[in-house]
Length: 72
Figure 1 (cartoon, rainbow, N blue to C red):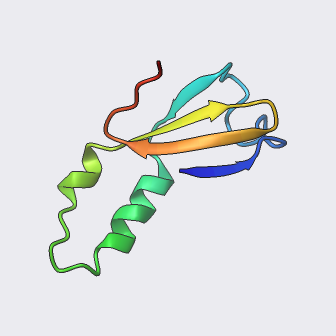
Figure 2: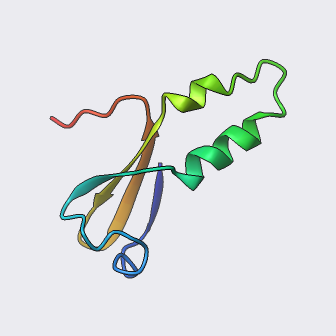
Figure 3: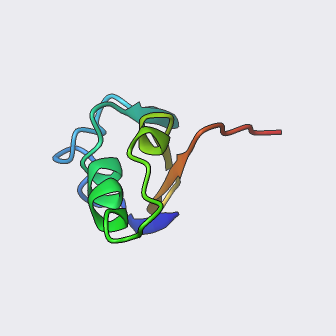
């Protein structure tokens, strides 16, 4: 999970997101898959099941990379 300033939400493609959203064709997931290639048991298909979620908070953006996310 990554936390960063939401000050640039309008310029980073999040201007239409009201609270939570999904990043399509995520560069973050692609980067994670590339980093993982050094491991002998690397399986690129595992990363195809991941989704990049963003949640806009008052002063920050929370990013979650996961197969499933639930909010209760």
